[in-house]
Length: 226
Image (tube, rainbow, N blue to C red; front, side, top):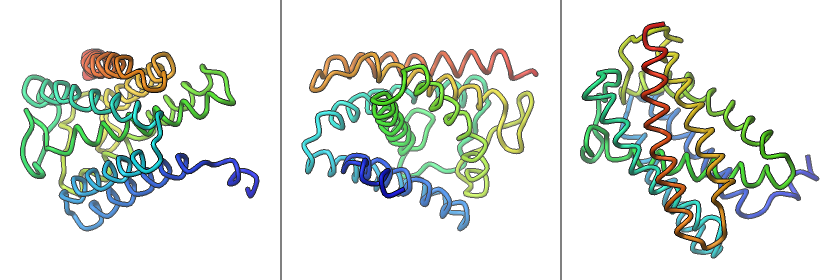
């Protein structure tokens, strides 16, 4: 354990701290039934990462923040499609203001997810084969929805109407969608990352946003009637 802690860098602690803060905010929002905690947590966590990037002057964090920002903004279109066309997602609270069909913190949430998973795959790839790092994080990504959606419901933030097989509050198609999203994010981070190559970060974000849309539509079309 002590040896493992010595291997961690300041960037590692920053990313791990952001993940702990995210989990704590979501759990607190669910426990208190306050959806606004989701928004405040997203804002606080992304602010932490931006301040950390500035203080550390980290080229890797800077690249990932741009990659994640583009991905988060483009994810709004996927939300819009599910809310307005498929009627497969219902937001019950719009923190701050509404962006298309999503609460204002939703692109920040995906921004954070992209940075966190992109960072993890880059670090794991330093010691593991790319297929193993991507596979592990894709599997972890598929474990997030059942936990996340279970907390979103009591927090009164959003819910999914029953479309196909449900795992409590979580449809099967959402779990599969998260797998596709995490596969895309981690693969694109590995393939496109070059320090201070901002054009590649923009392209990776565009591809990730398109991949999220493709995954959400495909998984819903295939699994919503299962």
